Image (cartoon, rainbow over all chains, first blue to last red):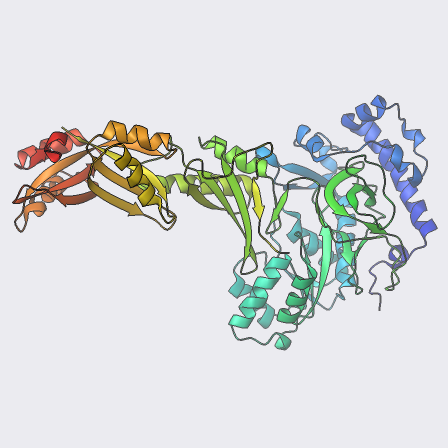
Length: 433
Length: 142
């Protein structure tokens, strides 16, 4: 059973897909050249004219875009449409307090929703299902991404958002949710809670889960499938491109089909930027050929993945990407939130402490726990516990505000953290994913 | 006259107290009173020592976080209610005590209590009015 939301595209021939991609790429390149000064300048620098791009095969002629370009043009500098065309803004946390801002036209939201709808359909979702969305709602794309996908299918959305696990379980039981959407670590946590509450997962109407926004392993999949008595599907997305629904898993559960009619993927060598052949791992790059508001050209995701174009046994022809194996930068994903060590450094400095810190990430009871070890300095020391506790609280709040995710703070003795010898070991990731 | 107390930030790790006291012993610094305030993660070691300046320099050179704080020392007659009288006088004047710790001296019949208040001058006045004897640094190491 293929469960395609849009079989005309999902099972289209390569020739047809290429034709769609070529037409959209050409349109996008003109949009960039005419409406985004940043891209006009970039094209002019390499002597590229929009008419030089004739088919999707010409994509290699285009320059790359990196996250720093979004920061340099914060907040709306790369938008290609006037304000009246925008219908939505999302943002993800960025370094040193600056967020990465993404705008959407009605068409962009519609395409993104379709990507998300394809993911829900591939997981067996239909209009007669209750879709339980436990991703956070807000600037984070998770909640609204799955929400719109579920509505597009015509299913019934239960927009629970994250947190309050006891209530989540009660809704799973009482409302009879059929598909759960959240981060895999939260799914593990819900599974454990169900067990603690003495509920038999087989007694729940839940039959599938769509989990993403953070790395997870096959072992976690087995664990989740067992503890919730469901089939667990992976979903991929990043806010710069759209959100969840850029790529999604089918019943084969070995790689995610990319919505390549909206988001054209390439895998390149992160050092030489040369395209890599199918099956070879490298940096994943997307060109937003279906987007109007923020048409990013060859955006370097920093995720390490590989592509395969073989037709899947589910019948879909859409190219598959492997689960990302890691990052080509130092970004951490903590409970679905992107965290850069430089953001932590910014907070440490702003609070008046020396930049001697270390980030330790662990997975405790299936939840990511981040602890920031900071060396005590005389400027912040006091003979009173109360004052030091106040300082700790201040650091914790500043971290939460900047990172968008809670962190524990551990004050350490001076010179007790490893010193920079060339490159300081800023991050100890103990998670076994 | 306030007394100099030194405070040291100590992580809760085995052997830290032994290390720090050994550092002071090597410099011939005598410890007369000691208190530790602790949380799960760390503690503050507070000391009254014979030579606070040497102690601060020594501890700092060893790379620890240290500060010097002015605290008050009061002499309390070793009878029931002795401390109550002093603490009542401060309470009546709305002066709160952040922390206090006591130690005995070779001198029979009295105990010393170190108290930490926000305003030493105000507390000194209140204690003098209540006839509480304040002690000097030099008296502790007689």
